[in-house]
Image 1 (cartoon, rainbow, N blue to C red):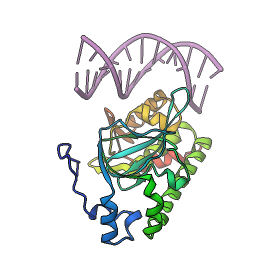
Image 2: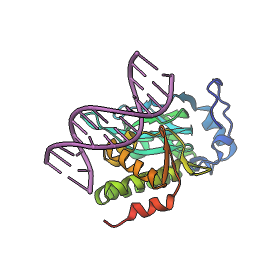
Image 3: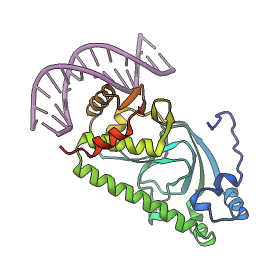
Length: 239
DNA sequence: ACATTAATTATGT
DNA sequence: ACATAATTAATGT
């Protein structure tokens, strides 16, 4: 299930797309046509796929790995807006009525993506029934999530925000291991602080406290949540 | 209730 | 050895 770095060429067959929401209503012929226009690309971890403000010349589908949508403030501070996991479209500026990318996309792991020129977006939407509606559903879901996060930021305390961030991570990008749920990719305290609007120090303190009480375990750049329920309690605790 | 600064230690290449 | 990551304490708002 890991993309073998050596295999330069990726086999593109319709089963890759058939189960994904934007394509689920399409027949085999349509999917083969779409695939024929796609370009495959592999990225290492920690590189940018596209940058905020650049002309949105292509849109992307994440086949394997994780990508973060990141915004950079004028003084160089990063804010991690959201994580994109395999099967999701991203860089879909056209769906938002934009000509430029609204955020920078940075790979969190080694990734495999498909991409198409943005110029064929309108044709896609018109020709393939369900493509547009399904992607708008996905976009709506993301906006909903971001709205929730705004409320979190404004109303919750840092401890609760970090707890929420961890819960989202294990829900969206976690896998079961013997002693809990581990986050799929390497993540630093700095990353978590960028997701929660705090400092790496505060994150560090919280995590070591939670580690002591057995809620989480963390090795270098790896975090496993042993007691998700306790995190839920922490995330909603009254002060 | 949190950030900032700075000093110290651990960990991966 | 070197850079990056993580912890910890002290001090500030």
